[in-house]
Length: 409
Image (cartoon, rainbow, N blue to C red):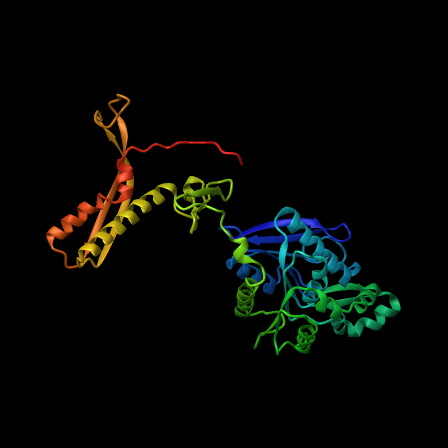
């Protein structure tokens, strides 16, 4: 997994801290934006575990600290639900400008309410996921019940939220009470997946019912039996991530995004995957990575060029032997081909050198073929002869001309 630290400007000009996590291999299936729970941070266990599991499934995920939380600048006391939504829109803008638009929004607890509100401002988003989310942001006011009178009278008051104490101002209460998500949920025109635990003691599961009832189709609900609000068990976070990955594929045009470039039969296209040695190899029906070992400066994400050359010869050899034995109806049970490549110096290569030099390196491919089955000696000998007739073998022993042509980008 690749992790990139991001900083971007939030709603009030403060620098917000984010972490963009992407798969090491290949292009992400899609970009997701994760909103954490009220007064939490991007590195809370549930957020980090769900993000990692989604990255393992091929997604790129950006999670960040809202203004005044975690590593982000600003005063949490000056924030409210509206500013959280604005920070989400700003984070989505960073993805769109520097990477790809976020197509999936995921929100945990109050972050779930925030993504429901923000989705209407983000036309590129195709799907929204809520986890233990309230149907209305004013649900969090029950956390402030003991201090609400003081906040109303004095304009602000210290409130202990988890391990930290925040100065909550009256504007927070006014703002959060002014939001109604029912219409936003009904008209957001996105696919919706609602996760909630029937054992959630922080946000009652009835909130999930309200969200689900307000939403238009397509919508889905998954009950997180035995899970707590913060998904403190790793298994619960992984289950959520795996379910999101499977569900999102229907709505994110993953197949279209993964569509390979048009390559004609018999052609091979090689494209840069990074500025090191990783390369994407595409044929008319297949795609894979080529790379160099880490010792050579690569990332070892695929076979190196010589390994692919040996694989080509080995596969062709095995196929040719199998095809011949099948035609003859010989009892060949299995064929195994092992190959290696090295270079040898020739003291006298008059028959091999065209430059007249007496010392030259000669490329040597050693091919070891194991034939299994009740074959007699003549059958085994014939199959070894057939190995030399494999088309790739003939190509390597023939005269090869490589014609280069520079084409427009």
